[in-house]
Length: 151
Image 1 (cartoon, rainbow, N blue to C red):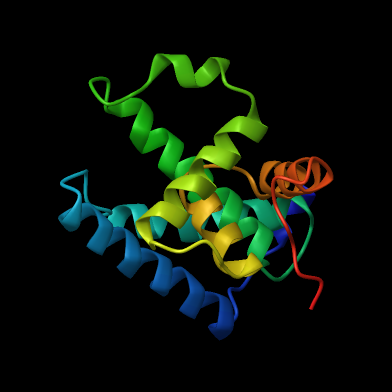
Image 2 (tube, rainbow, N blue to C red):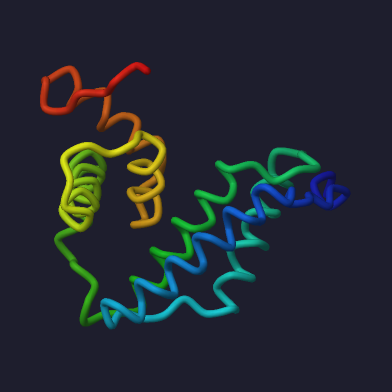
């Protein structure tokens, strides 16, 4: 009941981020013939982000709220596509799924060097939680499979 007293706002900076993600998803959907992101999904992302901020008793939505709401929306949409939903994905650990998403992003961009923030954004857009991405980077860096430039 106390959480209902909060009406979290989305700052213009974060709103720009959400709009960019929405535009990217719409373009990806038309390019790869997957389901397009709709205006309703954009609204869902905004409302979920506000709900997550409310759970923390916060008056402002942060990037973690946005990322989590995008992840939840993506997974919800994906679960409805029974013909495209990979049942084996449930058995893959989060580190493997994060690495697969990173590998796909790198291949799509035909490069071997990517910015950390770009990689994180691409991985979280594919439905992987940011914590899984960070864990994967640490683990694969320790194994010398990835190199993260501290600069």
